[in-house]
Length: 115
Length: 113
Image 1: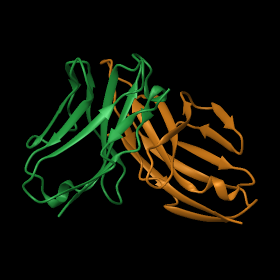
Image 2: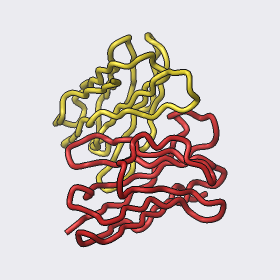
Image 3: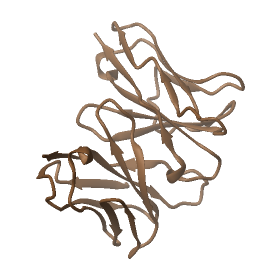
Image 4: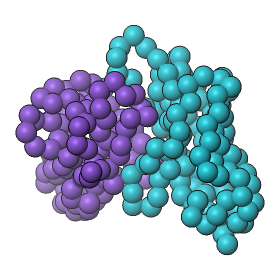
């Protein structure tokens, strides 16, 4: 039973390019959460999605960031026109319904570097 | 605003030297407090959930306790393989179904042989 799969593990983008981060949840998990970890800061919530629905995006920056979790395929976190401040580790977690924080399983993250 | 403060930022122990990590929190109604372990280059790995003051959970050399204002992660006779960053997070209560996890910045633990 594979865990939460994130790819790529490392991503380098030049300023102004687009970054696409993918997350495949654990088998049987229908809820996906994205968190960002900036250097020397704690994990910060970005967005919570269920299949084809964004449930809570209160932690998403208003511009350039978007997320989706289609009926088929992985969840995608998309960052348009990246800037140096977007450099961070982006973690995806998944859970079965109604599990609370203890049901979260995190992936190994995607480390985005903007040059 | 919900807040989590962890101390110390870093802790160096000799193998077998027991100690405690602290997690202080302010939250508008606590739904749960969570401890995670994070190894370099990896995602957080779930350790414990505590729900109410006075609750305790144990797993091998780790024991987590909870009061109304803070939680402690006690490490008894640590081994080098316990070296990691330990993260504390809180989940606030509320009227809506979903509440995000609010994380502290972690305690980096290094256990020397």
